[in-house]
Image 1 (cartoon, helix red, strand yellow):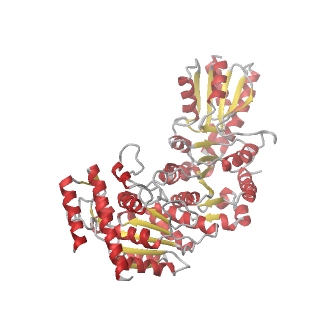
Image 2: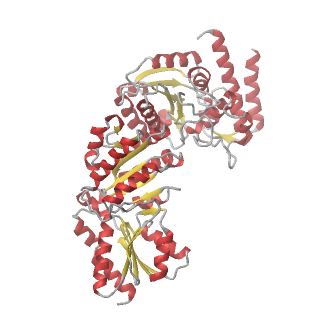
Image 3: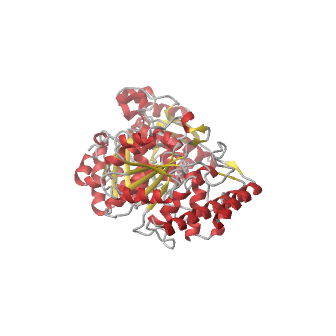
Length: 277
Length: 309
């Protein structure tokens, strides 16, 4: 990735973090930690990798994205708003009765959302179904899916883990947001996941492990995954839950946390200051 | 013809005209009778192994791309085991997944209490806007499958699997949400759901006729939406009703008929035939019908009691 592309994507990441904090602060509470940990992934997908059309969200030949950790909706909404899928004013309606932007991703309410998720463990199976359906139609779209680390404790994830390589779904590229934290504590303490790369390898996935906040590394990993045609890819992203907001980073309370105006403003200001540096 | 054979043949026929029809199985392809479909359409057959939750999730994803998936497994697994997946990935997501729960109630026979779904329809009634169908013979199954395939939303199908029965004429037509008045009578209404109970209800009507009681028999076919109009008009006429279901009397047909009686303010007494809140057990069909009080004689006795004879 050239430096100017990297600069632009990193700038977008800061913008989306500010938008996400603003969206959640407007409500006063939300899934801050897990939203902020996948920002760079969303940026690389939606600003560089995916074949999408904001004016035609269900475009036939598009690439698909399943946010299996559906509670990170606010980060994805910020990206979709910035990309023009809907007006940024919608972000102010997060979680209001009748909103098109509910806590968890909803394919029927939000333009650009490909699958409804929210009950953890289900999205990867849906992504497999989407990959099979598109293959039956002879389409060459890529199907991207993001699961959480806590979510990986669900049994259904491993049913899906077993199935995707069996069906040789080379166009399925999945990501684990390995931010090491879950609601009740550190994943290592609650229900350990390591050696997570070895687990996915043992299930016959093509596995890469990268820094999930390095846009260049994410982009490179996706490029490598696209070359693997005979099996699905799992890109394990080492991330920081709450990344980019000092009050939230590595704060075990950051899964679904209240945020007051002052805290949000300070975090947003800190991100803005990085722009001028 | 085995009902599962009818299921397979109907889907093979539908698939010939509609490239989007596909099937999913979870290692019960032989039990569901769909090996023929696989032979005809291997690329539209997805066997996930023993992983029902994954099956329903994959079916939901297939539907998101426009496919029309029919996913089958034993009714206990199609309901209890995948309730959240079917609820959320399929129904809450407003996708089009046809979930087929085979071996309803006592037809699970030697698989016994672990596999005997007396609760599946009740669970499914609480999924908002979901249509629940239980075909009662080979014709209704074949014709309803076509209607279900054309219907753009999810459906739960209780599928009698082993053994066949042709009751309806080839010319009969079926709609979702519509039952059939299969025998007219003026003294009491027997509302039945599914193959086994329609057989028992019709036999009970014969037994009652021998005692001079004219029983009206309704084949509900659709548990949700229930054919409220058909049932209400019969109950207004007879004032006495017996629900006959191969299911727990709670949250299934009996509860649905009670709702009609109460909400339509029909002066009508109701007796409910079915599992009286019991778990399943092993046995052959006849012995199980006897054990759970679901035979024609039980229905006729309940009718006589309601009538006061």
